Image 1: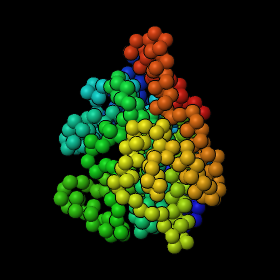
Image 2 (image 1 turned 90 degrees about the vertical axis):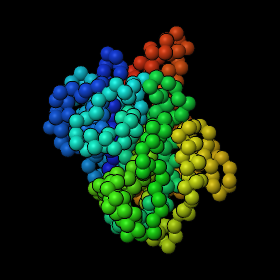
Image 3 (image 1 turned 180 degrees about the vertical axis):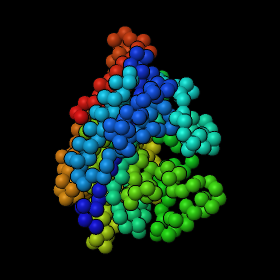
Image 4 (image 1 turned 90 degrees about the horizontal axis):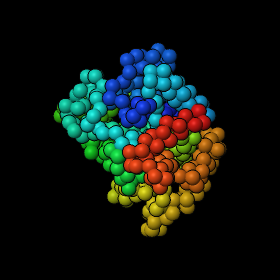
Length: 376
């Protein structure tokens, strides 16, 4: 495999807001999705709820290309949304919307999903970012699936944007994960020894009529069924476009490092799900604030120290993929905080300045509307 094989693609799911109430819309405005698809083509699609809209970049060869494509998609969807009387926010939860008030998109596959999962599906008032990295060899993809899980909590911590849920400050930096984990077949993936072993496990569920195919495996990282990629799904949706590109670049560089080790007949140590899940919870609860467990030392290490180690490990890979600046942006995230930090600070500042709870929550929505389009 070469650097050209490790292509990159990014998917984002945005929330649509009523500019007067700042609440999520119940119904997508007539003609909005059609206008997006007419002007941006198949890169825009509906999501489970009518208040959501999804974009996906084309296959990109560089992080600068990925940034350009993603920025253009955000800007174009926001422009078309505004023309139809709604605003766009990039965050994994809305500060105060109620899931019970929202309407599902009228598609057969979403109807089937709701019939199967009931309230668990209806509560999916959450959005995320998915990052695809091209791994064209089936066996390599399965091998890397078992090794890449180590880095997932670190990426989640950098991405957090969901501290609120239905008007409550939850105390978690990523409440989205708590909602998402109610779904079946989520969390860390199993470890498989080969592509054939993976296929056998999927086939059992398919033959039993539980799932139609591997697209119903909603793990934090999975071999994509539609594309020859390893798809990272753990991260929150970043409000900042720079943060989104940074996290995608780190994920891509980490896979590049694993491929590089493989060429040298080495591999990253495979840690148990028990240990990685502990870091996953810490990232969900604290984000970058309280550190993660260093399994070798057996102690909690401050996140900035862990980040230094990560960036050192992938420096060679960032050079090879021409994305040193993008991965180094992680230091900026740690210094100024994630979207979750900014949302909490906005809410607390409004409350301290005399706003009531509802006013402070609307101020957070205004912040998200503004910051979603910064830098694009």
